[in-house]
Structure formats: structure tokens, C-alpha cells
Length: 215
Length: 226
Image (cartoon, rainbow over all chains, first blue to last red; front, top):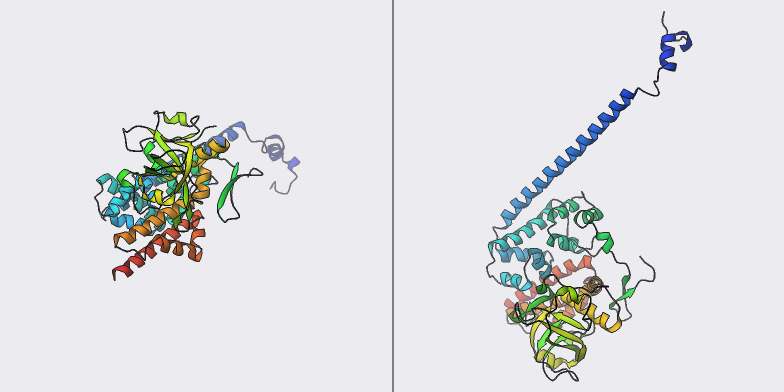
């Protein structure tokens, strides 16, 4: 006879199973297994994420090297002209490449650059090229000059400090401005200074004043 | 408190010695040789300490410009300038590596007539890093108010941009032997039109204004060469 439809109390085995055995509080073994499997999955996922990040980093390196090789075929003056057409200031180009403004001026006028400097200029243009073509950054120069996350630090500053890859990850949306700064300058928040503000005077020129209320 | 110092002294300068472009407009932080500062010195080096917003009248220098005396100084390490010597602006490697240390005295200042300044030999132009530091020390010396150099940059970066673009504009004219189309006066007219000067105040619009200036320079050079 089927036990379906019978009161649970009439079927001691099933009733016991329902009432006496801890279905709503599974065995210690089951809890441990579940926690262990979840922990294992979490660990595996973390390792997977780390592996994916490593592969992505390597891919970025390969992409940047390839584009730098391509750009380096052109003359330095040509590379500089393209950067200028994109709106970069000469002093920023000099900083980004690690030389003085007069050195850049000489290259513009046709003086030869060393191999290392030629590659640095090519690398900068490759970086700009990746930002434009892969991450759809329209005005790269502006993008590089905008202060990040309410700080005074800009993309130009971070590139000069060697954080090219982190900037690319930021452009790709993998890092927010705050995460980018957390990653490269963990104490950046301590350096924020909101005691002053810029306002416009009656003569139309800007001036600096103390904030009436902290921002 | 601690005022800014330097890691690399050469970063205080945009150009020095023969690197100084004759086409660059006179600007805050320019160092000139052999200039008389009334009441201070009959002759000697001096540095322009006037603010960029007040030292020009359109494309021309103001009738007279505030200049501080520059002279030899004991060599003091960078870190000590942050906590002392507040009445001076350090000018390490002003005349090149290995040359004697010099400094500007921010208490020995006076007005120099524009003609005299323009005729003087310019031996260095401070970079924006150097100019911001000069302004920080000048304000602290006069008021004991410590203003972070980043604030000077945020407030007055557009004036450095104007100086850079003016130099590029005039230099392009000089390169093609022009004395009428690419001059300080024509730059001023171009810059004041269509809100370009205001655009330079917005960091987000600076690059496009630079690009526009370079297209304009190229068009004018092409017109001259035809």
C-alpha cells in the first residue's frame, strides 16, 4: 500500500525521517563538505582571476611592443608632429618621454634622437594609439590632463611614473579612477587638500582663496 | 609646514643658457643678466617675480615689471629649503651643473622698466614646477600663508599655456621670415576670439585649443609660403 496520502505519523519510518532526523539542520559532515566545496570554488576562482589578469597583462605587453615596433619605423619628427596634432603640450611630451623641452625642439627640427629616445617617443604614440583604437578615448591629450578622482594627479603624472599598464586598464574600465590611484599610490587620499579653492575675480582672472567650508 | 623642494634641480628650469628661445615671451620666473633694479642694485642678475596675470598688457609687457635680485648663495641641500630660507628662492644649477649655487632674494625687489628687461640677456626660464615654487615662496615670505604649489598650478596653468603657444606661434613666423602674420599681436587677437582664451582655463578644453592653434599656425605658414 502506498504511503502517499497517509498522515506522516502513521508511517514511522518517514515520520521519523521528517521529525526526528535533522533535515532542516543537516549533518555536520554535509555542512563541512558544503563549506569546503564553496571555499575550494572561491579559491579556484581567485586563482583563475589571477591567471586571467596575468594573461591580460602579457597580452597588453605584446600589443604595446607590436605597436611600438610599428611606430618606431617612422621618423621622430613625424611622431612628434602627430602627438602635437593631437593636442599634447610640448612640455608634456618632454616629460612623458623623459627629456627636456629643448631636446624635443631639436628633434622637431630634424636632429637625430638616440635609439632609446626614439623608442620612447614611439612607445608614447603606441600608447595613444591603443587608447584611441581599443578603448575609444577620443581626445587622449585631454584625457591624460584631467585630474583623477578629485586629486591633483593626472594621467600624464602616472605615465611619467611608469604606470602605463594601469592607465590602459583604467581606460578599459577595469579600474575606476579611485582604484587606479589606490593601485599606484595607496596613500593618495592622505594627500588630498581641500583647504583652498579657485574662484574668478572681478577682473576676470582666477584667484585662490580659503574655502569657507571644507569641500 | 614644509614648502616644496626639488628632487632633480634641472626640473626647476624650462630652459637655461643657449636653450632659451628668443621667441618666448618674457614671463614669471625668467632670469636675466645685468639688470638695474632701482633701490636694490645698479647691475646684476634678476628674476621676474611679477604674477603672470599682471605683468602683461595684451601682447606687450607692462610698463614696468617686478624683479628680484639674484646672486651667489651658500649651497644648501634641497630638503632644508622646505623649512627655512623663506625670504629666498633657490636657483641651483642656474648656470649649469657644477656651477656655483645661486638664489633670488625675495626682499630685494623693485620695478624694472620693460625696455630694460627686453634688452637684457635672458639666461634661464623657470619651468612650471619652478614658477609654482617661486610663487609659493613669495606668498609665504609676504604673508606667512602656506599655499600648496598644486593650487598655483590649478589656478594659473592657463597662463603658462598662453606663453607656450605664443612662443610656438612667433617661432613659426620667425622660421619663415615673417614679421606680420605670426606675431605676438596677431596671436593675442586670435586667442581672444571665439572664447579660446577661456577654453585654455579649462583643463578639458586645453588640448583642443592647442590643436586649433597649431592648425592655425600651419595655415598661416602655408599662406606666407605661397
